[in-house]
Length: 405
Ligand code: HEM
Image (cartoon, rainbow, N blue to C red; front, side, top):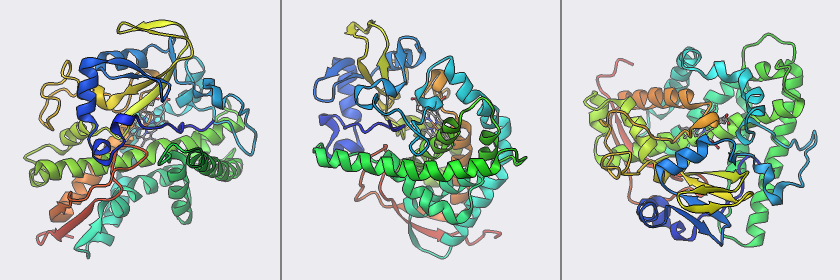
């Protein structure tokens, strides 16, 4: 039972172009068959904002507990291979025990205190890029920012960071095709990464238990309400849920700015960068879909869902629902209230939402301040196979001659 299930993409959005832009398919499905069963993937697909929102908030009828899935029920877990019973796959009331001990540390007030650290991390990465005219935005900026930030919050030594990136990549990998070998290869990679990370964190948690550090590993180590396996699961969850998502928020933001031709307007402040990032979350949500399982027989938008049925909730489709957003297919940073659900909703609403926003605000603002020209090359975009984002984003830059640095 891994935290992120090995799911397959629907047939309709498997081509490279459809992966880059599943939005026409979403529009068609929202209109024609808003709640619809896919026999091949054995899941209901849910496309409308109202329905997605409803399922996410009805914790009684729909659970995020993936261990209920038949193929995963055999994994009981052990010290070596913890079952990863974490908040993200546990419903109320247990959910509160698994999240309550750390919730405070991710509230806006606490997150503001991390801001100087994030500014320093970003500035150092930009120092390294300053002498280049070209670099890959993904590899050299969008990946390292969240990895280094979360490593610092957890109190992980710098020489382990490369390893972390490899582990988190393996954990969210998705099969490239649906052959049995490929699915097995990905599952084995996930299991191995999970085991290695598990061993590493188990040791670190033991070392820090009773300590008075204020890093997140020490806080977890001292949380008496958690078992050993749950503490390990928490640490792994942060890397898993926080890194590749934030990487793709940064990438999708710059991708959208370039496409809209607004990079310069954001730099000068003519377009507010916080609102523009919020719009990027809606317009190109890093997580396009979430899974739930029905715990009872229920009706959803006229369809009869049975106990045990799996639902795929398309956040990316909900975030472009014309019932909720004016001109949903347009990137409009000036839209006033932006009720997107890119961070989910209900009890599982993203723990790291405020951190991710702050990281993106700092990173994008500093990046645009540092270079007075930034051109992203959109001519050969390769979609990621895991989340919604890009494999790479080549950028050409020139320095701000008037920079005070
Ligand atoms: C949950 C998205 C960044 C930690 C979620 C969920 C979404 C999401 C959609 C809900 C999952 C569900 O309901 O099944 C995102 C996006 C991010 C981001 C788009 C970046 C742009 C982060 C960061 C962290 C984080 C930086 C931590 C450092 C978590 C955790 C949960 C979660 C722990 C589970 C919360 C719970 O079950 O109570 N995230 N996330 N996320 N996220 Fe994020």
